[in-house]
Length: 325
Image: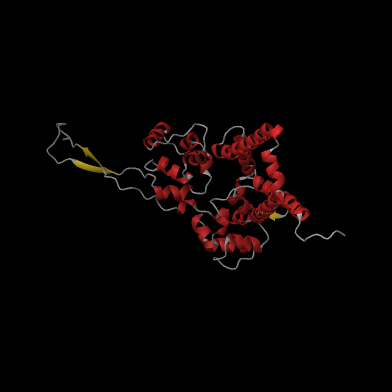
């Protein structure tokens, strides 16, 4: 048997190849994995591993591939320099290959940031794959990372009586320690998904218990009602009756966050939101224009926020603040 050092060209080449395969497989998992809130809400797995586990694999194998790649480059530095320098009668070919390789790499890197065609098709397909995992409304959590809240906190946010929820869960045969257990812990303890836990208590929601919206104080409208003499039909000297009528409730920033954060409204376009909430779309567009914000007709709030470098809920607050509820 040939006597060679433990760390040698063959070993490094194999580690580079194997880590590339593992990194590629975890990269495929990262490409198809649903959005985090959906993955954790439905206990999504691929080949028996969760989103978090695939993410950990991708990180560690990427580090291994980086180390092995650097080591492999060091072992093959001389041949690499020969490729780059070329020989006198092949210099132009070497420069051309170097230029093309550089341009291809830069195009894929910069194109991913600018969403340049045809790379934007790959990114759009990636979004489609991620969103396709939401097959029913039950697969989409009511708000981001709802499974991390305690049962008490979750019920408060969903307007469910905590005591009734505990009774309902236990009546359904679930083991629940107390109201301080998280939805995720309850699901794990009973070998089910957080989505399934929510479906059991969803019927206990009491939207009518939502407190009245807090509105910005506005001056009451004063309406003067003249009093007429019943005989002469002329105005009398009686002081006019002042009737006060208050303005209808309007959205505030806090109310927008409370009602819509994590509810999936960011997937809708401005036109759809205006239709559903009975808003004047032209008036809203003018309001956005004063903030130097423009939304395309077929663009979702989430896409617009990404393009503008904002958070979707902030765009929604600009749209709704001051509008009638």
